Image 1 (tube, rainbow, N blue to C red):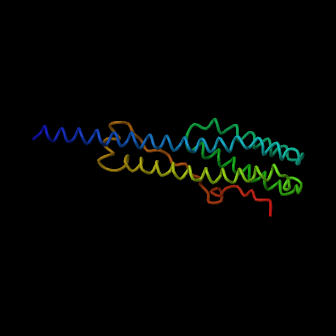
Image 2 (cartoon, rainbow, N blue to C red):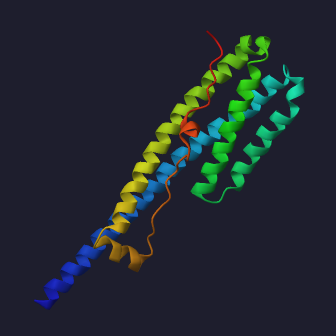
Image 3 (cartoon, one colour):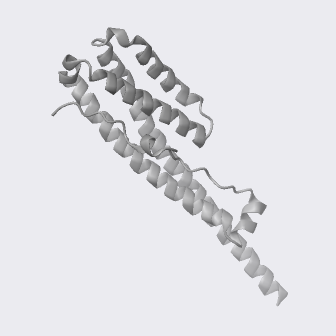
Length: 181
């Protein structure tokens, strides 16, 4: 009887451990998806900056701030830090596009309009990737928190993952980049 109980316990432990591994790998895969989308956006930023630079000679500080914030993204070591740098980058881009409103020639520039459309699409893709990631994190966290999985988590060292979230409702919105009518 004891052997059957022990075998059942070992089997439960193995199955639960494998669920943790699967959930952990889904979180890593989902983070990779966010990372890909964010890198696409980051690669678009120099094109936006160069396009705006030709029209707004007086906005040098704003353009330098965007480049600086973009370079700080790689220094973020956690999901929360990455979220904070992405918030700062989105805010800088919103400021840039607000300033661009003052330059009618820029608003009519075909390249700028195309870049604005690309950025808007990327923001949607980032939002979808973030939702997928947060869903994977939720599933892992449920495993880590619920009993008896929490016992397996403690024994194997699995911990809760951080959600990739933006704190303020205003910051949750994609940068408003619509100029054409």
